[in-house]
Length: 235
Ligand SMILES: [Fe+2]
Image 1 (cartoon, rainbow, N blue to C red):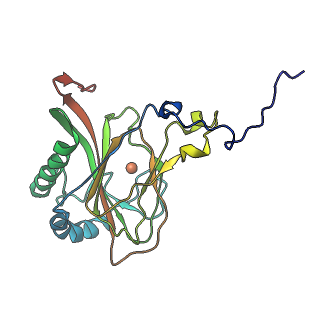
Image 2: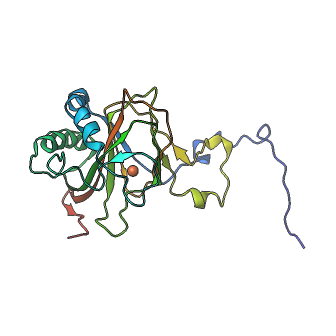
Image 3: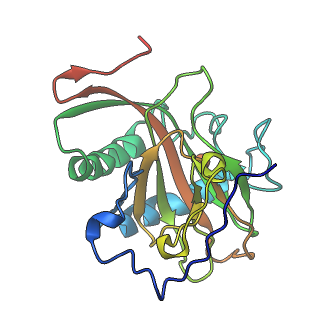
């Protein structure tokens, strides 16, 4: 026995959007998008070094990508950009990233970068959908991607995926909400994105661009202090 009753409606008859409060959006998910003004300087200093050094790198275990070159498991010894003996490059990037965070954060803050690595895409490489949570190993609050070398006409951007997509599939989105379970930021060279480390994302296969490598620098960080509150949950 069914107790359901069907209603047939039409938006021509029922105008349900005359009052702004008839549609309320709640619980926004925020990522932050800034541009590094002097990225060209960074690119000219780092591009050739990264492309050369990356040739020695192997795909980390567990990564589902065919050819992506990444320093996720460490850079060639003695030639490190990050956490090496020579801190020239790291100091340069720290200064630039601090300027980005000063734009993004709205209170005094202190952060600790736990992992930082570069990715080199030359032959249209992809990277599978993943997040940066670490699963018990130095869990981070936020992650960043800096697009050091990015050709907006020929390179694939990053694509974020709604972490609530499974829950949302239990209901229905009306067409007027223009909902999509993925989001593609409009990336320009020199952009830096900061997003919650739980937010999964991917890079889809592109076309070969040997004359214009796509190079991103990615890192994860913990917020040690935000305003006067201590947030470090690891030490
Ligand atoms: Fe990632």
